[in-house]
Image 1: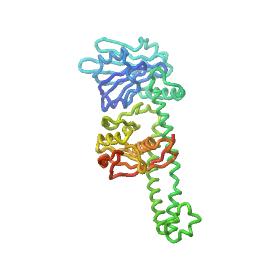
Image 2: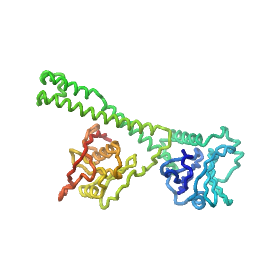
Image 3: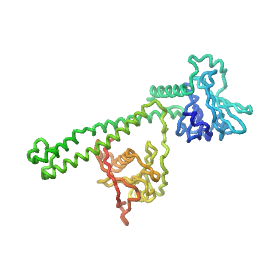
Image 4: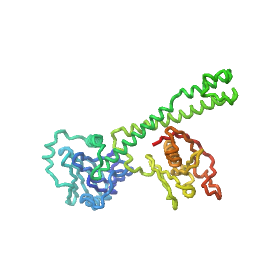
Length: 413
């Protein structure tokens, strides 16, 4: 994957006690991490932001690269097979060349930088490479194998020590903890979905509808009491039974799609790849700055951002300052805040994200005391351009059209 992105320009250098993060631009923006932690040194690629924050006091190697290599192009990544686990990064332009060598050797890692005009700097004091190579037990492996070995070592280490806190600014362990938390949440959601996928309820409604074609309500009252409405006629009960069956059938199809999405998300979280999202997801769309309003903000795992008004006045400010194509969400049968899920024009929002914001809106508007586990709530959603405030109304009420209805199941925390 890395070779496919070369040549790439070095645009940013972020340093920490763990090592360096090199921000690159070549077929998109991505990062190359040089980790010099003694237990699990490594060099790896990630298409998202750096997992550690930049320190105010930059390390000498970081300052040197910022002065001599920033703006240059990474043209080659090679494994120096004669010296075991030594990876060479070659940066160049029309005037000079800068070579960064990463020694991926447990207990004695190092970053060594050489320039074509004879300047040199290293993270630690350089050691004799011939002696280091001779001490290696295993044969030199490929660049791809080294990355996989580092990742496996990293995740194994974190699994053994996930009960402890991250030390020395090691935010990679925080990423792992967040990943585990997300995985548990997805598995709970999957378990709730499984409970709602019983096809027997749908089949019973259709069966009742067929029976009501030739049997009276009084004849079926004993065995079908839980589904029949004694106040309705035979024809009305039959119509109601088929309508309920079709409604449950459509709902089941939507639930199966949701289940498929969650299964894919669980598979990704359970994989041994380094998390792509990092600690803070990058916004997936341009989020407007809402002025003079008190809001709650939720950033979804997919990168979309939603806002929630804290009062009637805040709801109106949020609505008026949002884009016409942003998604407006409101509880159907209850008073609630206005939720706005921001997106770019003509950008399709995943139903899973609308559902997440709908559940968040319900929990924030109703409060945990009014919510019972498994409770179902209907919400309406439509684009902001179809929502018009009622003139002179101080309660923040609106007229809306072209709305759709979504039923969500709440989980009491």
